[in-house]
Amino acid sequence: MGSTSTTTKRAGAEGGVGCAVHKGRADAARNRERILAAAREAFVIHGAGASLDEIARTAGVGNATLYRHFPDRDALVHGVMHAVTERIANRAQQALTEEENSFEALRSFVFAAVEERIGALCPMLSGRFDPTEPQCLAARKRVEKLSEELIRRAQRAGEVRTDIGVGDVMVALSQLTRPLPGVGCGRLERFVERHVQLYIDGLRAPAKSELPGHAATLEELREDH
Image (cartoon, rainbow, N blue to C red; front, top):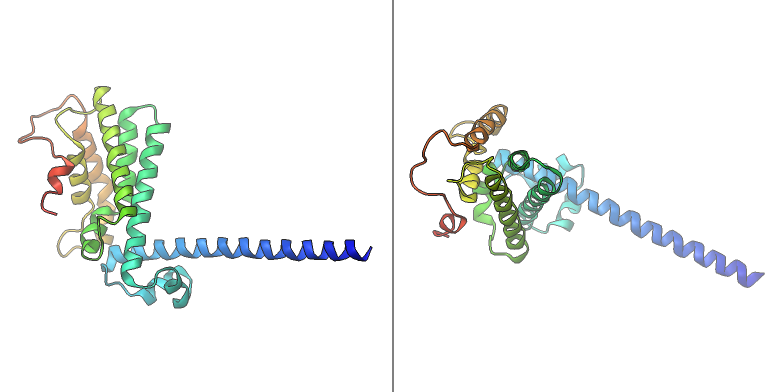
């Protein structure tokens, strides 16, 4: 009787410890996501020099929690860029898998990238971000592969003009989501969806005009780096 009671108590205690560990990990994961979301917004508005104290306050965590997840600013920049790239890749995969219409799949991917504000983020963070870091390089290559597949599929279906390449789409996304000089991100955002839709309409086949030059490739865009 005593042995059974002791065993039961021990099992209960171990179960309680396990639940506490699981809850602690879940809380830590939620805090990390809050920090990354707050940091992305802050970087878009204020650039890579945004206040880490303000990011912690916006995320609803203490400074110690922020630094436990991201020991310095560069680590936080890396975390934001990786999270953004992963989300874009996942949305591209989702569009390929779930959207039967090839043009709508491409459109879905484009607006997913726009929501991440890549045009505002990339120029601001490039000086503190190593694009050759293995984790982020793998995520970027996944985005490129999936976006190229989206474009090629739409072209094969006769939905998208054949004289454009994935580099053209990436350049347009970057430019259309980048604030104009002297114009804050908040003022630009109300027009972004409108301007991106204008661009997407220009991708439709049959083409209404002949484009000068040749389709931009990702290799060309990276030649100077």
